[in-house]
Length: 441
Image (cartoon, rainbow, N blue to C red; front, side):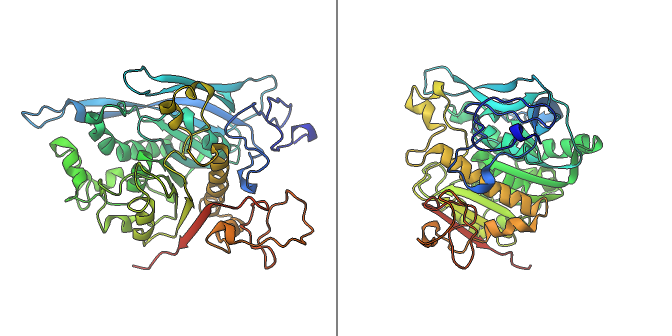
């Protein structure tokens, strides 16, 4: 890479370089500030983005179920997938600006917003056989609201496919059964399709797959990772017509909602616990891939103790981690709030946490997700040191006053400095990281 195209956090501007190009955008959520932990930094690869249309034939429409017959008509289900990938630099290319909307407080219409990106639309892919990461957003969310992660991972050598789930409005709870049925089905279908299609192009290695889900997407990826749905649980009664029953634990089609060649799972503020009780007492033991859970302990939407914490305890067959933001709520999975989403509190609360600065949350998440995926998907054992923190509570780490390291240096996490590896002095605070090994069956 040319010297003036080097990757660094001071590149918060649009830059187009010849040769091995890097494009950065002012305010792009995927590029973090100087206080970000070490592995949050955007990678060395130029990012391309393109949009795919996938069609799954003859899918039951739960929202059109006839209450008299208990039958649901079948229609082809069309899913839009946004794909980020390492790309060939294009001198003079323009960075992408994403457009999307989220539901506003009724009776207001949806609120629209734009997000600055670092990706080049339809740039030609470069390289071969990257790991595939499939991302599932939250209820009524948008893929454009998760570019802090999708672009960031693509710049580090991943192909990232984010599904537009076409959710019903979150303000209409009568349509909630669609999410319960479709989330794992959509994830499994998209993953299988891309394993085959992009694998044939040699863009991805179909044997190296990871899933990332936020909120309802967390429910989806945990289920597709092998957490079996409880046939006697409340979830099956919430989906009319018995449409979920073919996929529950022990049912003949239960394998249709799972993903093969899965190497790692990330669930941010995951739904599925609590009143949903999606998997029952035994279902989470079906997850065998390494698992990273991320949550705020003041999550009022899905509840921390019956959500992420309970999932961590129950997924006993997985090597697993639980990163907790102390004092944070549910909104830790989306970008920093765009300007147009700051005019009304309802709109801003999609994105922002009442306590934590959002750019800080996203940077910490990107740091740990990078370490986790590099370790368990790419097999980079050097990343284990970022996960094996010396103190479960971040503020218990010690940084001697007489250290000769520069002010902004990253912790090496050795016998002298026990601050979490990759964090800067005074900046590993308010966090907890628990870990547990899988138990042999």
